[in-house]
Length: 276
Image (tube, rainbow, N blue to C red; front, side):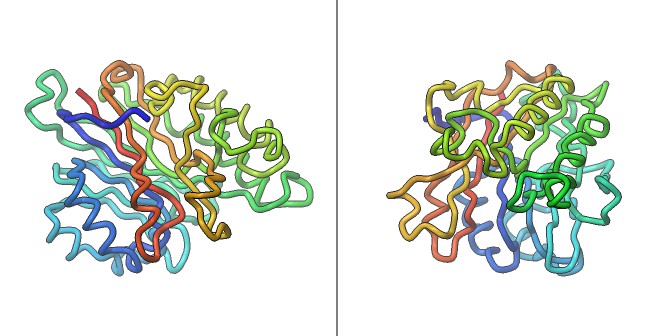
């Protein structure tokens, strides 16, 4: 797999599945990989409960947090200053699934002063891929459709969308295309809407820019597997989309699968993208 390289700007995203439970893993990841910005999803805590002290001690002074009690939650933690923090309530559900901020860029990117970053958590969609019998699936499709309206790239800034988007769009993004065609996250109605939304917005699938379509690429492995690494029945549910302004600037990506083996790990692995 293509590995991330040294970069002027490093972005990471991780569905942490409870930031308070796994704060030591977050700070370990920050220390080992030194992203400029880390997007988190499923933080599962209210904003006042977010472990900001530990994050600051790791060298990340700047935070944008959208939280709620026990469920969902998105955050951006940064070594670089943040401004223009925004939170979109998709589908008017009151869920903390999105936060965005403008990141002041380091001097190494001399022809750009800032980048707009969105941390996003798309609904999983339940078990049955039927909008009539499963309201969660209907919610998921409406959420993705709203992304097309609400996540337009900033006209003046490069824009990145990162997060757990809960859809594996391509055949090699799942362990078995044939067996998962009727499983939520890989059904044609989801994957077609997902790709149509990304293309209409004009974003590049940054991970697949660096990893060939015929190569398996996963970011999530179920807790149900006794040995997730041996069975390797994964899915690529986490994504980074890059706007046209920066589409050629990404120099490499990596999925840090080691984190999936840590004690009491999240079922997602962090994704890292470097930009020149």
